[in-house]
Length: 309
Image (tube, rainbow, N blue to C red):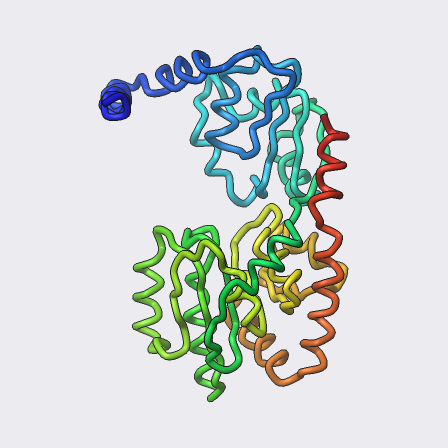
């Protein structure tokens, strides 16, 4: 009964332009006094955090994306409580990559809040264990991507890549793990490009790691990334990676542990073909991927995290 009443109240508040007041009231009512308050994501979490800044001795906010390329989080704020003013009131800002930090400072050069960089971690033991929880039937040479089917992830490029590969007469299969608003558009692209036999939209998987382990190659076609976690996970499982030139991917792979290219179907298809042909090159990128992924373990992350606080 309570949740039904809350939903009705929220709908009424939204209709009369008072939903923000409702959120402010609810979060302040629930909040106590804290040593540290952390908003782990830009946008809505940062906005909610802004309502209780006075409840924390220290306020820390994380920025996970390149706000220069993708700043939809700004829509969560109004002119009286802008994203810039909220971040200026924080004690510390933590970025998942140097690229994300640099992009932020181009947009907001006057913010004086202390800033630091802490890359995302991966839970190495959990990922390795989960990768063998079940088996996946392999359809020959397999390319995989994992991510939300959202415009920013750029997964709509994959049917075009698959079409170019198919036109070369190659038998390469593409698995897409994930769900989202772009699902029906991607399915239509698969159909119109006649790559139904080459591309499988697997859907959301709570444990995608056996699919990644089963693949030969991982690709990321995003328009923007702060620090692509799924890319790191694929590297841990020994997958050579090809990624579009986003802030996070560039920082992660610039040491040669993967391939960074422009977001272009021709370039992706050429590199896939090159790795398909060359076992030793794939093996070398696989070794480099594992080496890099091992530096992102959670113990190292937590040590740095506690130092920030």
